[in-house]
Length: 473
Ligand code: NAP
Image 1 (cartoon, protein in one colour):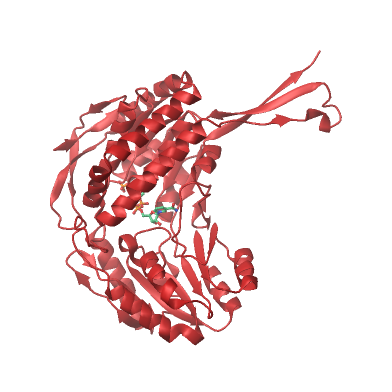
Image 2: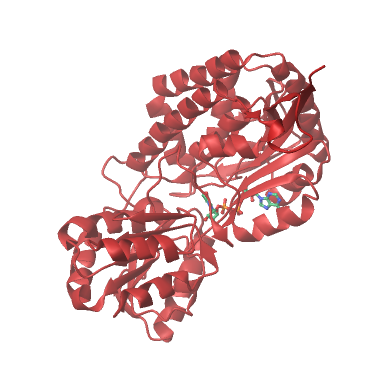
């Protein structure tokens, strides 16, 4: 099967195609189009025309289209989950969870489309402002370039396309090369739901060529990007004066205070560490446990980790499957070895099995080693102890990243101190940093990015505020 490009409401053949292989067994899934420069430009031009058509659509029609996508996702849940499982090697259980979340994301987008309003401005609050009636409106930007990563191929597309369409923008979407099929599926659902031709275009091909044309184009008014800090930095450099939001990586941490109930929280932290092979931007990577309970914590953590089933993502019982690429396994193994050399103790894992990396638990990794200070993006965690809560907060903050952090404590004062002092975009008290629902404001500080997602917040980023002032008489 060949997956063509989606431009101006129809499939368009490319001259080149690349073989899409399953990360689990390297079997060929299909051939995927590689857009030429000219085709990227055509997609942008088609989006410009699509934007004009979107302008004609009242808010309730845009809301209905987004609802239409929700209905199609609900009707085809299992097919969508299998698609994600195949192209991303995401275990079916987690893939189903992603489809459920995608449905919620488009539901929120549909609601947002109906409440795009500004405010009235009391102009007479300033001397000289008397005799005027003024208000603001939120206007769409025009063409938005959306560039998405492999790890949530359906829901992270939804976090860009949903608010963009809700606000009346047209989109050129460039999904990750390893996970294009979920994106093309969504384009088909939008088409069936009545989205005007050109309002959503999907182009595939290597990020550094196809993505770059999009980023540099003066016709594109905004780039919304989710992916690695390296690529995010490049995009920021290339984008010039256009608006840019960046949702980047992290090395998320969790603090476990001494008074916590380990039987309850350890299974949750194991899930936050190893769900989708740790390839989640808010995956637990650094675990700081009070010294009084660290031995019990480690024992329980290893025993819970051993319960995870490794295998084919399409098997019902699989918890952990293949990493996205063999190179990523090698990188993670190198980092594990570096940590061992620097004094970390390997408590579990540290080996590969076919295209999978066995969930790996290290103790006492120096905080300067890559498994701690870089984004590991693999099923690898380290557990270190702390003596005082202040020290734990300092360790969490000692990072170039700041997406989310989790804190388990029963002490109200320490919980508030953590909320105030942690340098992250979101603090989860009594939960893992991996917690996210799709309407909450979501985004990072430091090298974890700029701007916020969570439909309402993304709509803010994707609209321009216009002031209208009427001088009376
Ligand atoms: P990636 O390598 O940065 O790729 C992300 C997207 O950018 C892909 O579509 C990629 O295309 C494209 N791209 C690559 N080079 C480009 C360039 N020069 N110009 C424009 N686009 C370019 O990231 P990934 O490996 O797919 O995803 C993992 C990263 O995403 C991790 O760092 C993770 O933390 C982060 N992430 C962040 C969030 C968040 O919300 N903060 C959520 C999920 C993931 P190709 O696939 O063709 O290379």
